[in-house]
Image (cartoon, rainbow, N blue to C red; front, side):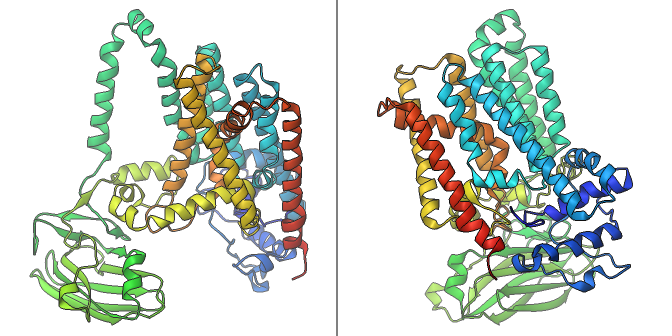
Length: 593
């Protein structure tokens, strides 16, 4: 139904699998096949790519001998399992047209999506062995989510990652119900390994595994400690050793809070300071600070002054001050020696500016440059209203961050494309407060994308439908709160192991949501993450949505005709899917220009 190439980064995912099929080995991140590139780019306009996408593909991109760029981000940095399996399907058919090969990989994704649906059904049956309507309602809800159906029919490695995480959740349910043995432990270990070879986001399985083990062991702790008395000492010692390792090898508390680096690195420096105890040490590159909306809204159309005391480590060294709004960039270049000197940049901002950045730059390729007492003020403000609009202009406040070796491990082993300032920005709570509206925007985007976003987020339901879906989700949340209250009062009907699973699923859902929301960092958000990133937790999310709705609607109001209610849910799902298909998707992709 959705035209070829009209899914998130589908052309890049296809290129990865096709490269393996063509070259018969795993490509490195810089591998390219000019012939394959030309065939992909030539096929894209045939599917109205230029009509729907912002990145236009021109006829000159496919001239003989050329190596055109593939629109969108490259996917060769991802682990290869999804693409290796896809390449085995393409290898005997790589002489076919590109469109035929893409349909083959789309069928492969449909197969993975079908297997995920089967795993979700198996998880519902395992968790609710005596509740047939609940067993049916869980996979039916997943089946009627248009966004999930759409992504399950397009080429992307999220499908295999979702299947692997779903299988992990199914196995954890069996462990809670039937106990932990070597076969199930090896199954969890194998799925964790397969996940890392599929997509870095599956690394969430490791903290989830630790959480599940803790919940499973907790009620059995007394019997286990009586059987293994050394555990009473070993567990606290292991915990203390882990905290020490994190503190000494991972966390670096000397990064400058509020400033983002674009070059090698920057940090506090206490060997020289113009004022206070520290200066901001900038390696080749720059540090910058993007001001929150409250600042640039008050400065729009006004004159501002950026000043800083600057010195070189030794000799004479070049640097710059820069102020950029959404319409212009003003720059002051300078050369300084090893004595502090005041550098000043004056500029006027546009009246309709929507963004404001301040940069402290080091133009040298080898040595360090020091900045201190950095200020941004409104020139024409009354004397009593003069204030420094920059945060931490003297670098006196530090924040924790990961050390470079850890970022290298995350990038080269886990293949996660985090900004090098990502983790540090999570500790900058003042910046999070300043840009708090972005969290609300992202939460709404995740809700819409999770349920019914097609294409590359171009096709979305109307605001009325989005509010209806939000209300339905809140009903499920309210139902889970009601269940927790009922269980705490001893009025529940679930067994101990079922309550353990539901507690695990609630924490897992919150963890997945927080991880996806954290991808907004470093603030301001470089982009808003898709709702599809939540699908790695599709098993707990879907089960809790159905169970919470049942607790509030069916149990609270004691509805007797439960079969009719299930039938009504199926009818509502069919109507919603039909609305998305005939009222949104088909008119958008196949309607008049």
